[in-house]
Image 1 (cartoon, rainbow, N blue to C red):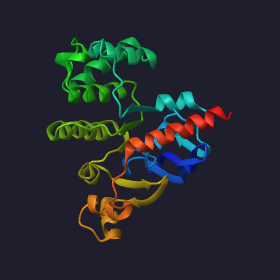
Image 2 (cartoon, rainbow, N blue to C red):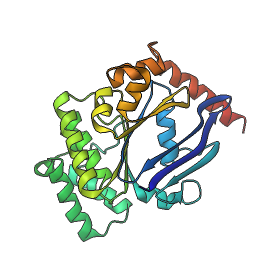
Image 3 (spheres, helix red, strand yellow):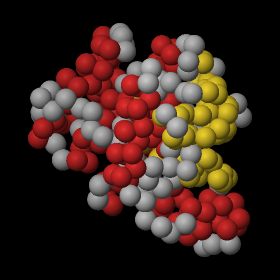
Image 4 (cartoon, one colour):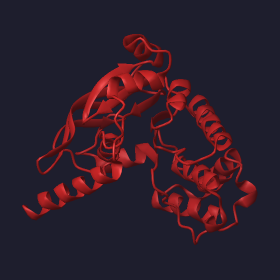
Length: 265
């Protein structure tokens, strides 16, 4: 099985703070891969580098055979992404949000129209296509974001905590959609989550990052065996510890470090 994502010796520093520390891993074509870690471990920073939103301090990143640093335009066309924070335009309808994405990615008009209907039907929003997004529930918005991220036929779908705050029924439906897409279109899925049961049930392989370093990787079974635990959540806690991480303090500290780094330029 060929690799569609290759990460080698990837590092990201903000001033003296090392957010991602010399990590290497690969994701196979058509794989569902979970990237797990406590708050502030480096997950979102890694995704931002993979998706061209942040420039690495050092290391190499390759998506679908393209260098993230040297061929960023081709890389952007190879993936879709559902961000941790909402990114839809609430003042547009569901259809208009999809259509705008098609224009940005230069999807031919006829194909775009067909694809919008297919995807909105898949996520059970076709009957709401003309409703404004501001009228949607959180689960409906997430489903629309997934549909939008798939509009341009990406080979990779990045999901940064896509089910955060959703009820169990909606979470199960979302993963059902994603599993169906993985099987029908062979799309590679790279996701982060704090719901360990999701990762254990959905992912083929898992990497765990903590303090900017990958500390373990393998299948859920392999990680449980390594830590002599009965669930992925227990394995995760055995590997990362049980101390509560203060995400907001971490964000403030990182922002200060980023500001310091920029002002020194």
